[in-house]
Amino acid sequence: MAEFKVVISDPKTGLSVQREVKDPAAKAFLGLKIGDSIKGETIDLQGYEFEITGGSDFCGFPMRKDVLGVGRKKILAYSGIGVRKQEKGMLQRKTVCGNTIHAKIAQVNLKAVKVGPTDIFSTVKSKADATKADRAAKKSEGEGGAKKAAASATKEEAPVVATA
Image (cartoon, rainbow, N blue to C red; front, side, top):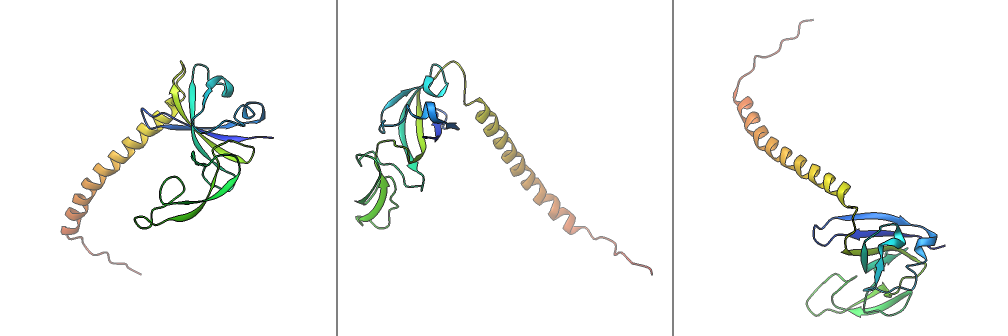
């Protein structure tokens, strides 16, 4: 039983959408490599065309385009996917996945090459716009709030006396 989380990204806007792909549609991904194209009809998105850009397996190891085959391999690398640069020229031994999608892959990353008639990124656009508006409101509120706090600190308030 193959099951993937598919992350679809739009390179023009930078937005991404996540979907789950179950067994009948997931079998279409098995055996494909990074860089291959896939039609949107396989995941119920008519008119779309996607390119596989990467992914990760069930333990979180990333897929690399230059590592052939399925499964994990230990590579010696100094930069690229799965490697954090320590020092210039320092080689590191890292475990990565091969470039072929197999049953143990948990996430597949796709790039929208051809966009269909329905906009799958519309809900994400509205959330992103709302987030930008909230940030702008907080920023303007923070600037105004600092002035108000300074003004109230200069005013002297009458002491409160408790009677028993």
